[in-house]
Image 1 (tube, rainbow, N blue to C red):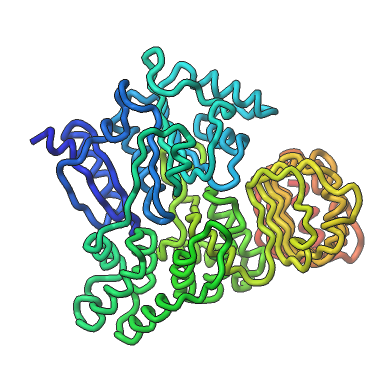
Image 2 (image 1 turned 180 degrees about the vertical axis):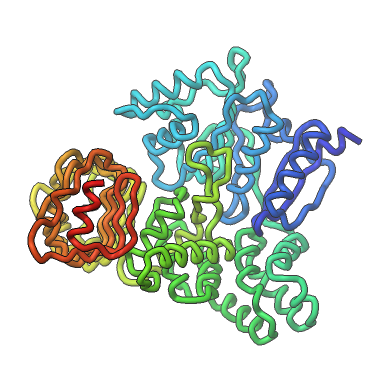
Length: 560
C-alpha cells in the first residue's frame, strides 16, 4: 500500500490553474506534501494510481538522461508543473543542494539568466558576464543541483551562464536540467533526449476545472445554462489557463442570456491579428476575460502589467506606484487612499486569475504575497490590446534604443526598462528626433549613458519618467529640469547627492521618488521666493510623505 501511495500522481487546480505533482517515495512525505498543497487553496484533488514517482519521472537516477524536456501549448500548465517540482524537490529530494527555477522567456540573454541565478543563490554581482559565469561555476561545481528552465524559446548556452558541465552524475554529484518549452524541437536543441508532451485536459477533467471556477450552483441549477456552459468550456480547448480564467469571468453570470452571449463572443473572436508565433485563439480568450473585467480602470491597469519584461516578478507596490503616476486610478486628496485602491485592483486581477502569485525574489523556493506575474500568453494579448501606440522592449538585452524611426513616430508610451543600454544618439536626431512620448520607463538600466539623458530632455511632452536604478552618480541629471510637464519622477536607487534649485521648474510635479539615495541632501531645494511645490507624494531614504508640501515644509524635511 505504501509503495502504491508513493506512486500517486496528484492533479490539483490551485487557484484555478492545473498542477501536476509527482510525489516521493514514502507515505509521510506524500501526506506532508498533500497537506501543504491543501493549505494553499487547492480546489480539486484527484488521485490516480500507476504513475511513476518523482524520482523516476525526472530521471534522477545515475543511469538516466541528464536533461528532460517538457513541451506543450501556451497555457497548458508547464510553468505550474515546474513550480511544484521545485517545491516538492525541496521536501522529498534532499540529495539536491539547490533547486533553481529560472524564467528563460523570449529574447533571453546570458546576462539575464545569470542575474536570476545570482538572486536565487544569493551570490554577488560581477562586472562582466565572464566574471559572473566564473563565480556561478565556482559555487555550483561541487554541489548537486536541479535546474528548471521555464519558457525556453531557443537554445541557451548554459556553460556561458556558468552552469557546470557535463550534466548527469559527476563525482557523486547530481546535475539535472528540466527544460519547458512550447516547442519539442527546442527541447531537442537543449540536449533533452527524453521529451514529454503536456497534453490538453480531457473533456471530463476540463469540465471539472471550468465548473469549479465558474461555480457549480448556478450551472447545475438550470439545464439551459448547463448546456451553454459546456459549450463555453469547450471553447477553452482543454487549456487549464483559460478553463480557469474564463470560468472565473463567468462566475457572476446567472442567466442563460449572459451565457449565450459569452458563447457567441468566443465563437466570433474580435482579435483579428497577432504577432508572429502567437496563438490567435489564445488571444481571443484573453480578450474575452479582459472585456469581462468590471471597469475601464481595472482593464487599463491590467494592460500596463505588460510593460514589465516577460515572466518578470513585479512588485505590487511598484505596480500601484506606476498606476498612480500614469493617472489610471481615481484622484483622491489623500494618496494613501489611492494606494489602497491600487492594491484593491491588484486583488481583483489576482481573483480573476489574470495575475499570478509571484515568487520571493531572494529565495525562489517561496511564493510571495508582495509580487505578481503576468502569464506570457496574457502579456502577448495585452500588448495587442493596448490603447494608442506603445513601444515596449523591456528586458530584451538592448544595448541601445531602437533605431527604427517608425517605432518612435507618434509613440505615447515607451518601456525600455531592465535592459543594458550603453549607447545612445550622439546628438538629438535620428529615430528619437521627432519622438514625443508622454511616458518613459527606463528603470533598472544600470549604466544609462549621459547622451541618453541629453536625448530625453527634448521629450517635452513627458509627464511620467522612471529613472530608478539607472546608475546616476553624484550629480542630479539637470536634463530632467527641462521637462516642465513632468508629474511623476522616480530617481530612486541611484547615488544622487543633492537636488538643484532648477528642480523648481517642474511646477506640475506631483510624485517625486528618491528612495535609497542614501547620501542625498535636500535642504537646497526650491529657494526661490514664492514657489509652491505641489507635491502630494515625496519619498526618500526611509521616509515617505503623502500630503501637499510647501517650499517651507520641504526645507524642514531636509533638516530631519
